Image (cartoon, rainbow, N blue to C red; front, side, top):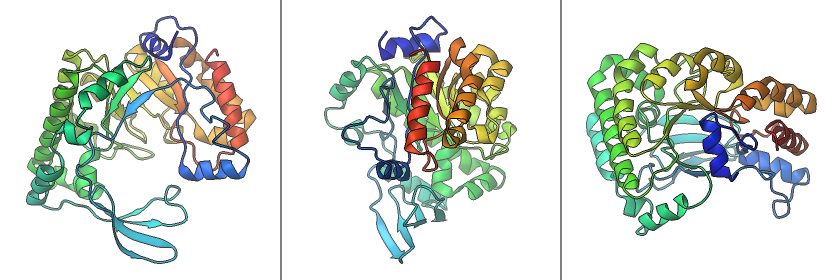
Length: 359
């Protein structure tokens, strides 16, 4: 089987030559550590022959992006406006390993939102992808690998709004000004549909993915009641469009403990979820027992176990083996590999994952 055939068969619980064997990515600081430990990027592939995937995730971002503007900096920190218009302060020594401070978001009023959307969220594929965007799409689809269109950070109905107004203000707006929340959600639904309708006239990807990141360690950031009231109808609008064009799998990316939201997503026609952070009690073994085969899962390998070394890695992969063997599940680390993972432990993990996947 090639990578595309294997992926499709796994997602359909059909026989496979082996389970998909995938690499979940790293942080930049992780790669710097690995280089110091002897990894030579020119001679050693850290994916270790993992199945290939096509993830197109930049097409939905604000365009044109905001110009990076440094407001102030010292030896330890930098305060700047990023490409999304967010004023943020970061540590210079660990920009990925630490959380930034979000100082100011680009939208405070309806007028600012409407100007932002008019100026930067137009579904112009010639500008967003390139004048040859149709040819690019056909070339991507022609490759024998799973093709996912991931509306990273700007395709969803909580995550993108969080980028605009900030998470605390957004949570308040559900009560203080729900009409404003609905205006922003409808604008994003219209934008996603306008983007996807053009794409779907040329090619049909295997997967379309929403981005939300709407949960923390112990609970979602808003209640299931609010998700069903405000987000569910917008999910359905988008899902109906992509499914009618032949997209078989619709996914959703949210970190944190999102299990209370899974029934709503399934009702909305979303049938794939990831990354199943183990430290947030997202256990793919338990969730498979709870939701059965209706929910397809990606991720779910505890990155903390990878950091601990061979014994913990072996135990973690044995824990996951029944779900891997059943199908409908593509295992990879439950987020990109952080810099507490040594190069030796990464290599051991990837070798053992290949074995457990049947390779």
